[in-house]
Length: 216
Image (cartoon, rainbow, N blue to C red; front, side, top):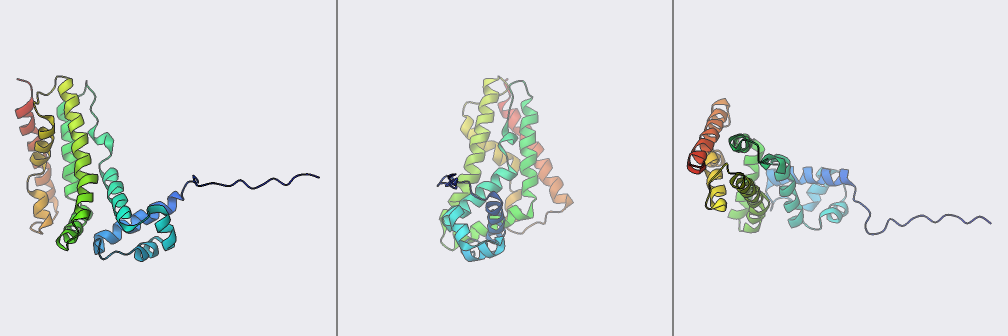
């Protein structure tokens, strides 16, 4: 008698449905921007994504972790690690300009402004942990990548920086100025004139940074 093959047990390590995960992240991103964290429920995320609430919890555990994953995915989409790559033989000015212009374009993005406003709204309502999540997944990651690039440029002899960590902060401050804050407070709309100003500020920031840190 021929034995009937037994179905394989996929076990606990079975991969998740990545299409559903992506749909959940997209739905959560839209809802967090529109309704902020406090106004977004897991039920709403599930309905927006076209999945069950159980599926949302299966992928992300809870709303806090879902929010962190949304922020992480958004930052990595907008600022992939390759943006901050530097080869020793490359021109450091070109590398810094690439980063500056990337950030300048992001500051013109209405969705990014909406995200920041939603997080600030939650902070105002007594939920500072969400702002901290944004800081950890966004600014701290960017700072680490920027610090790595600057150290590589120092090691290659293209820059002379006594405090690389501080210089990374200075670089971001120079290329952004107060333009993002003006958008946040609704003082200016992102039209062609504003976009040109943001790019000009980014280029000027790179020039000023290099005047401070190019080897004498």
